[in-house]
Image 1 (cartoon, rainbow over the protein chains, first blue to last red):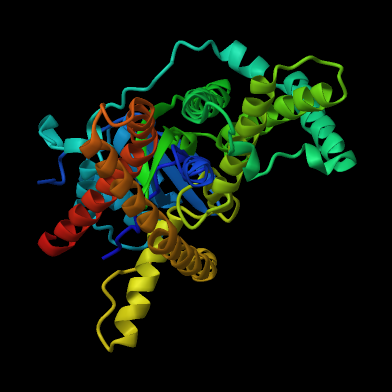
Image 2: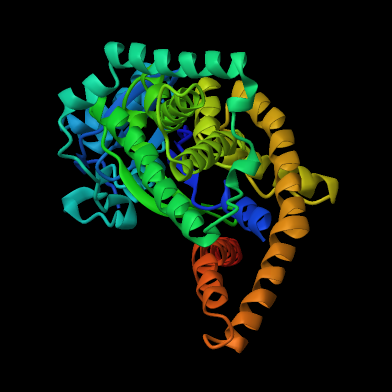
Length: 31
Length: 407
């Protein structure tokens, strides 16, 4: 019996890191 | 149960023919599926009011095969695309409408902000900044721009507040570019591994043609690039005394420019779902690259241990599997790098910071007022997001483990 292949496509959730780009560097440099 | 006489209610859905497959979905619930073209023909016949039995017979006449209608319909019902006979379907979470944000942004305004004229302006600004940096590479801020010799905490705090405004601008870039194409977006906070992130849910982009998805996906980094270019132009003008910039403004502009450039670098970490990851996945016609790669690696591990493959990937087309195999190297190397940095930099930094924090808190306000305030503010802007990101990541790992265990 024929079964269709059904695939759920992924959610498209673009991102920006909230602290990684800068924060630890700021702390390390300023400490 | 579906009988031959059952009539099925099909929710209106969008469709895009892509690489021999049909992508259908409901933007209002954010559920999209990739199906064979003939499956959508079946859906169209059901939507036209034919019964399950009639549609099965038609399919057999045209394709010479008996179709498992119950399997097909129950899968679609679980995703909220159809409602069972007599309207008694239970689509659950898949049918909950998404609350999109800033849907009142006029489409004409969005089209003007991401139209041809605007692009000439943005391109001109970025090219001018690149030309200035090529002529004088010292203009490009390095990590030293983040060092503030005086009023460190205050300036760091101001930098963080401004950088959060630019994060909002980045997300609005995605949102407005999607609006220009008539697609709604939801903004939120989430995590990638243990990194706390702001995110724009652009899933409804599956409802528009592939080539039109690139701009909304890249609009955030574009906003960052244009903002960096403006800052570099201002710094260059200050450098040549065409513009009088106070020292603090100059320092903050250079620091912010560095943060923005680092943000663009973050997008290159495409071993997690970043903006550039989606561009690559879209380019290679992948429907769920990261999940399929994780499944491929789990199967590879199981095979290596002489066990049965836990993930059925037989429905993934061969061309997509080739991308999955290549991407699995990026996935592994990227995670190796990320875990290496977590244990060699982030965790030692956090331990050091907690030691400092407990020392200052033990001494209290009476010890040294500036030290006390300084430590609390730094903890707020640094340790709290890190711990939040860690908490979300560990929570997601526990949830995934429970799902697999009780599946």
